[in-house]
Image (cartoon, rainbow, N blue to C red):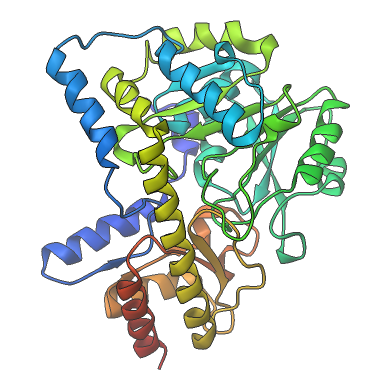
Length: 384
């Protein structure tokens, strides 16, 4: 049966292949320390589970509107105002099936066949594949530690062409954990807007920052698309719930696309998420952020002692993007050695782009400090 060209062009998500191998080894009785997948190890906060249980007990589980539960959109709007002093009207917020659904809406609303999107290399791999799915072209901007793996105005000016539709950035970033300051975001927006382009800002890891306050692009600009999620800071990965803040000019088209793409996001997940903004839940989430900071402080020196180079320390998310070129010629080969010989699962740079991918490994500190210390010991045994 015929396969579309776009389907054939879509590359596998290599970290999922490694996860599959990890599960196979676990089924054989091996103990695997998971540092490959971007999923916090903490359970969903109990107030969120309780809210879902109460809602389901009522039995009234029907569709919400395509843009989402009005109470939840209002809660997110209030969260922006109280946490970031950002005025984000609820009608500009679309609740989506995960952040991936939000990215789909933003790209579908802006991309014609052949349009180019600029995005940093390295960056989250699904972005490239979603651009291709909407017949766009992902144009990588090679970035290095000297710019904290973030694009600059110079990158945008040099790469922009008549076919360029816009720029996608992430702060905090996956895989590097680095941030864009408000002044850097403003400069990037200026470059994009004066070329009549669009800017998509991925804030999926918002809230997970260390030594610096979290922020939002929406504090200073309202003509950009902002993607966010309940998965990372709020600890709701399996609930598959995110949101998109759209510019006023695009709200109606986003609603129409959501009607056809999804009908609506999961109704139980939306009612559960209402409890994510309760003070007791936010207290739990801040305690977890402090735990992530301690894990980061444990893992960074441990890796450096083994010869991993981390030129740009992560200030957000829960990843370390380490240069392993002094340890091997190919990070994918090294990742396979680590999982087979040490039972430690990591992600090779191959997943995140084409700019020196074999020099880097992404290592997630999404497991306990005890397991992180054990992981470093296991890696040391492999490296001799």
